[in-house]
Structures are given as C-alpha cells and as structure tokens.
Image 1: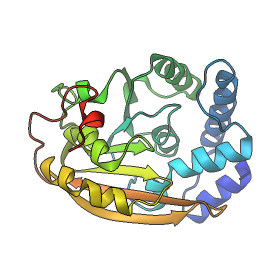
Image 2: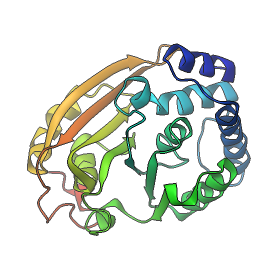
Image 3: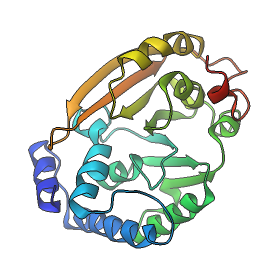
Image 4: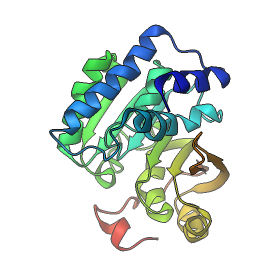
Amino acid sequence: MTPENFYAALETAGIHLSDQQKAQFETYFDFLVAENAKINLTAITEKHDVYLKHFYDSIAPILYGVIDHSSRHLLDIGAGAGFPSLPMKIIFPDLQVTIIDSLNKRIKFLTALSEQLGFEPTSLTLLHGRAEDFGQDPTYRGQFDYVTARAVARLNVLSELTLPFLKKNGKLLSLKASQMSDEIAEAKHAIAILGGKLGDTLDYALPNGDERHLVIIEKKKETPKKFPRKAGTPNKKPL
C-alpha cells in the first residue's frame, strides 16, 4: 500500500487528512525505519508494508466506527513502536493516549517519536513497566474509555491485564490477525470474573486480503480488587 493509496482509502472512509497529518505519517515511517536499524522495533520496514500492516491495520477501530472524534482517554498496552494508538492519534489529535510498555528502549523511542510528530506533551503519557503493576495503581485503574492491545496475549490473559484500567462501560479493543473463536470461548470465564461482557467481534480484511479480527469487550462492573494479580501470574495461571 503506497502512502497515496493509504490516504485514498481514508478518504473513501470519510477521513480527510490535512497536509500536516500526512507529513506526520511520513515522519513516523522515516523515524521508525531509522531507529529500527539501532534497536529491534519491527520486522516490517518496507514502506508499502508499514503503511498497510502497521498504519492501516492500526486504525481499524476508527474505520469501523468504534473510536470517533468524541473519544477521549485511550490506554495502549504493549504498544511496541506505537501501534495501534499513535496512528489513531495522528488522525484524532485530541485523543488522550497513555502507553504502557515493559521495555524501556521502546519508551525512549516513543518519547523521541512524539517529539518528532509534534504531539502536545500533555496529550501523551508514556509509562515504563508492567500492566499488572499499573493496574493496581489508583492513578490509572478505572480511568480509561478504551484500552487497545494488538497481538499482545491470549484473550483470557489480556482481559486480566486490561479490564482493571477501564471505566464502567469502557471497552477493550483486541486486534489480532488470527481467528478468535477459540480464544473467545476460552476467555468467557475470565471476562465474567473481571466484570466484562463480550461485545461485537468484527472480522474484516486488509486491502491486500489478509484477515484481521477486532474483538470488543465492554466493562459492565467493577473489576475485583485482587485483579490484576502480581506481574507474571496472569500468563502462568490464566483465569
């Protein structure tokens, strides 16, 4: 997908980017590839692949109307090089984004990237650490309208890592490439314990035909205080 095809696809979806926003995507690509030569951020570095498999793939919640201009506070767990949250923030600059990542080298990259992209410092918070630890911190627990996670963990584990951060009626948006039916069945018990309810599952394809899935889980009740458990436990002993 060329940048021109990317912008045309957004136009078709009713999303009109300014010249500044287009320049931000170009800057994002250039900086990602340059820094990737120093630290391992992604195996995808060809321009048409970055625009398709990182930028276009990241904005599915916008393309399918899950996140819109009125959306406010979004937490991205394990964002790596900033996906999916930062492409969405370029499109909706008013989106308040917090990113948690366990690798400090990624946080340093994202700090430098945010300066390159000209984001307002007050609109992007970057946290180095584990979701399990921040999920027990009252500063962050129950504070977000959305939590996004792109290929982070199986859904039963991911639910424990993310649902504690959501406000009541907030939504977890899990983006994955593989079919989710088995994971959804496996996660129903965990979702219920954690105060969530399974919402829509959107099955779609990228412009090149690659299948993608967006699973939405809504938070209906407060998550019991004992969740998330201490770092590492959700992975070792899934609910």
